[in-house]
Length: 137
Length: 145
Image (spheres, rainbow over the protein chains, first blue to last red):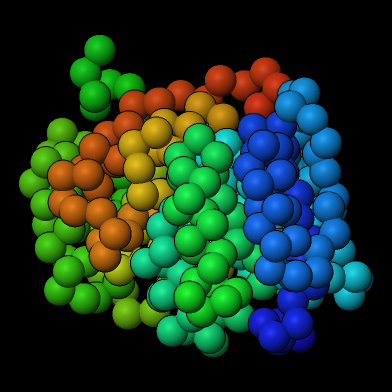
């Protein structure tokens, strides 16, 4: 399995309708910190099937278009289970920064996807988790 | 309707052998006495996979570890399984209502005893809503990776 190079992340980001607004906030964060990304949708708050977007982001990693994924749905559960079914994808559902410390302390888990829930986790908690994961701050 | 009446007949609690996890196991079993409980203490996450795959009856599994990531990685690759790493009551209900999951993972380093108990109760007393959620689950289950 290809190991994630966190010094040059190239992120596949995707969400369903419930995660759409958070996806926009996370994209702003990635732009501010000059982190490469590609947006795989969805592009509105219209009801949609999270599984299609999770699989799309997972396949982007599988096909070496990206080397990491961030996925968001209402609880994070549906989209995390969707992307997990794609070969070589190792997702972690994150609800607070303590879990980021855990996965960073256990590199053998080879986590290459972070999943979040927009209905369960505040945007600041998510952005703090991303800072800790990608910027070590 | 009683809590017992709403659930599937069997509840299997599986914990990684660590003091903190076993304390949670003890607390859950004390407070879920009405259920048809089975308890198993394991040392490796992969053992849970074998137990789940070899279980024939309809069963709700509650997995207990310090953090939920290892169990999730171990189980979420199995086709058709929907696995629920869970640190809050809302997700516990949604895991059944939207995701029709029968596997709940608790994190003893993130949640205290009573929060974990409430998460389990919400998980066991919620029911799948079907409709559009059935279609979404089918997308996951039919995916050929």
